[in-house]
Image 1 (cartoon, rainbow, N blue to C red):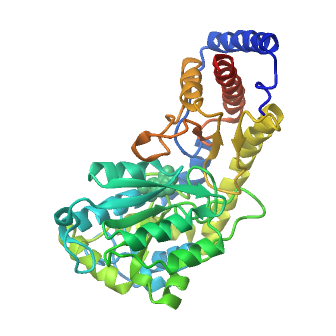
Image 2: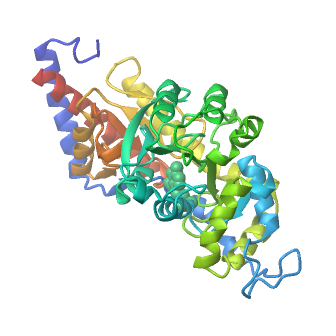
Length: 422
Ligand SMILES: Cc1ncc(COP(=O)(O)O)c(C=O)c1O
């Protein structure tokens, strides 16, 4: 039983009145804070501003990157991505500045031209994607954009519910894909277990043109001294001859500068040949100048990890402050549940059923914008209305302290309202 359900009506009413007063006092402060997206803070951006001073444009192979040419980009940067994504370097395909853009292009291509010799998804009609949830809202937005039906897969502490994934993909050839954020998942910060990864590598989809979209956006984004370890999926797929089934993604968006980094995909030779048909048509060559900036600035994988340690030093106090406050306010109360992540950009919380929308609304009226309730589910429909994604990274420490305080009051207010109404 939660703390409020255990109170008698008079006690709970008194608590509610006290919370209302605290809430009004917050409203009077006129806060204007935004915790809705996983953005690096200004102090993190300062880490990478020097990249703008890099004027290196002769690639290690002697190519002058100011000109057209080198359609596959700068090989030495692909080597850094290979270490980061834990894949063989010949699987890496460098892209533009956004991995989300690469995912979108891949789905668009599949809709129009099909996958691996199969009919275009658009012509097959009625296609579906599996969507582990809570998940990344922009993955779900791609499905909505292309009218792809989404099937919610519950997340467990070791990743998506694999019994359900296996059952569905092997039975329904209209299921063409699954979105995965396998390390420090957005929003829960969960890393898939070895068993989950092995089960992905041995999936037996009914559809020959089924693909796992393995979005490893947070592969090196540790905030703890005891980082999570993700079993490399590509190696497991090679052991099982299933390497054509997976397409992996990552970018330097939260390593250097978001929206101005370099993105990459890692996938099998067959899938690369399919990709080249499009990229060879849609552009002459990628932005090699940006690749050279990144190579000269990061130097190698060790250089990249040194930058990640700088980010972690700035991020850790924010995650500590948020989680410590949640523990102090809600530990053992039964009013709120959360997972303390070892990396990534979010803390995902679950309120009492039916309270998440109300909490987000109260926070907004108190001056703190959170990610919309429901956004972490397909069609923005959280069946229990419990999940809220908190993004503590983009604001400074004093602001985060204020925002967290307000958030705690709002969770208690919404919970008290709920219990009083029962
Ligand atoms: C899981 C996930 N994938 C992709 C992205 C976007 O990456 P990019 O900037 O490379 O498009 C984000 C950004 O928050 C993310 O959380």
